[in-house]
Amino acid sequence: MAHDRVSVLQALETQGVCPVFYHPDAEVSLNVIRACARGGAPVVEFTNRGDFACDLFGEINRELIRTDPDVVLGIGSVVDAGTASLYLNRGARFVVSPCLIPDVAKVCNRRMVAYFPGCGSVTDIGEAHELGCDIVKLFPGSAVGGPDFVKAVKGPMPWVKIMPTGGVDPDEASIAKWFGAGIVAAGMGSKLVTDEAVKSGDWAAIEAKVRATVDAVAAFRASKKG
Image 1 (cartoon, rainbow, N blue to C red):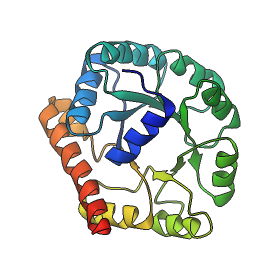
Image 2 (image 1 turned 45 degrees about the horizontal axis):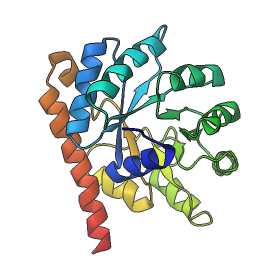
Image 3 (image 1 turned 120 degrees about the vertical axis):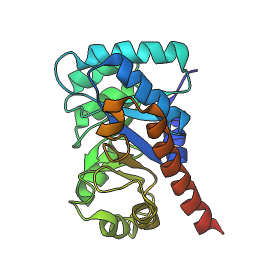
């Protein structure tokens, strides 16, 4: 199944929760990603960590394309255009950075791939929009103002689509606070895909945690429509 830019953005917003993780073993990574997908979050961010990470990503993504075509695998922690190109050539469906990098935006735009730059100010967000970024990553989410920052930005810029990473927990209270402020999705790392579950190979626990979090986002959204 082909995943174009628009379908990736829609899928991410629909699930509301983007699992963020890295593991150096391909088989472990595949099990985690498949557990997330079964839990209702097929859009997953794999992070760029260390030497040969792009080769590992290529191995994982090649297998997923063959066996799990509905999974949308993207790459995070990208800080230069060359690295972005390496991952795009290995099938990355979106690219995430901890900061705003215009050259990465240009590379992604040439391939019509979604780019989520890390933004910590209104200026960053405005520049990201000029570069064609549909969703901006608020990072680090809790450190730059949290939900109050989101609310403040959406006052004069109601069109902003924000996805914080860092500070959003997989529980109803945190979800209500952040999504109530107006975010469209949230990146969640080790609190969602716990080290304990990964080390013990408890893929069912990861699936259940992801499912509960995705359902909590859906329930909150439904409560606001009612």
